[in-house]
Image 1: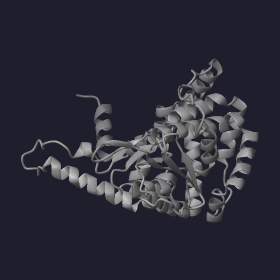
Image 2: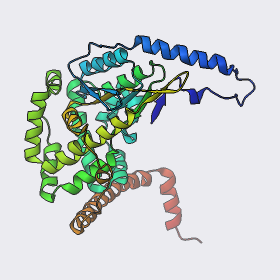
Image 3: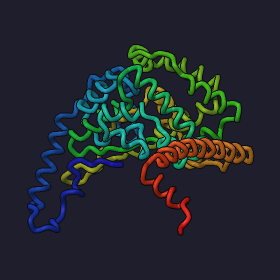
Image 4: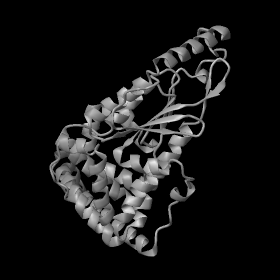
Length: 359
């Protein structure tokens, strides 16, 4: 997804419909130049930014302001808005992929309902999209998100919606989805875990019930505390940390560097350094910093190995169990429906006529 506000491509050229207003090309060019100058004047050269913002640069002079956020934090939303308003970026990149873009379009009330409402249809959709093991893992993580949502009364992704809204107010600002597709992440994560690790992780997610407060969420923005938490997670599931955190650090770094290419300034289309705002979870900031000047192999972290023989057996067993449970549920439901139908007078009369021999 890419949002390109006031872009030249959307406005230049004759209108196909005669009823649409047509603007002289010279007038349009002047308007573009004026908007560009207005944005340049609004852009602060030495912005006073929140402490959650990290500044990165490229060899050609482009600047990336990386906003580290906590995903259920009101103050993170303010940090994002403050940064975008101050630097008036050419591009805003968020830690979302096309499979989670709906998060930008829903309001808080709808998202709260979605996060809490995990039903059979969602389970089937997740399994169809990601496979049995990855789909079930996604549902378990949705359960965790719903648990936090219920505890805080706040839907996830507020900082991304804030970034989308603020980017729309900046002339010529493009909006990019910067994260690796979530099906790839889930499939690589599941493939990296042993059967025992999968069972332990699923057990922990199923029985997650610890209370969480807004103060706990804000602590996630403290780098030292977050690094300690990450270290504990690495000790428990090093493969999971590699696929869910470290590999996505690489992907996000790649996306941010792509977004930081020079842009064309009107009216001469001269190439000038870009200004980019990246909005990512605080847990990715240190990894992006480490990878910033390295050569990156994106193809390596996008491949998904075929399931092993054991994996196919487990998948078949789980599929059988699921269809068995579904079949049993349908059987129980059909018995109830059958009894209800048999109690109807019309059906009883029809059965009576069938039983009565003709004369």
